[in-house]
Image (cartoon, rainbow, N blue to C red; front, side):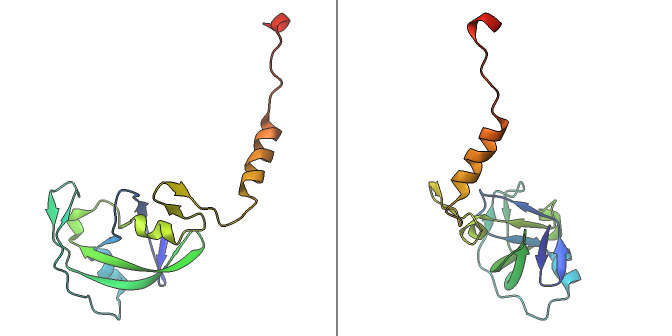
Amino acid sequence: MVKIGDFVVTALLDTGSVRNLIRFDVYKRMNPKTKLWRESTVLTGLGQGQVKPLGSFRHVAEIDGHVCRLDFQVVPSAALKFEAIIGSAFLAHAPCPFHEEKVKPESPDWIFNIFEERRARRVRPATHSEC
């Protein structure tokens, strides 16, 4: 779930998408006060070949408690199964940002937490006589 302003939508996080997309019917339900910016881009890879966005807008979004300002491209309602798609641009703002080939955690003790969790689940290895 993603909160865009005061409106909650069901969204797919798609690391293969560069853009954030939202269906036109969802945009209209939001009753936004902002007008759409013109778009000259044609999107490919939405299962239907090519889709021309109806416009775009910028809004504050909250994803898993993390708030950031994102640009959304509004696409025809039939172009998406989900109400919205959150693309890789969000990942640069995420609490554990993804950067090209590496993950850059926000908290320096994240690796220690993983180690402690693994240690707590560790099972004593079997000896030769137990096999």
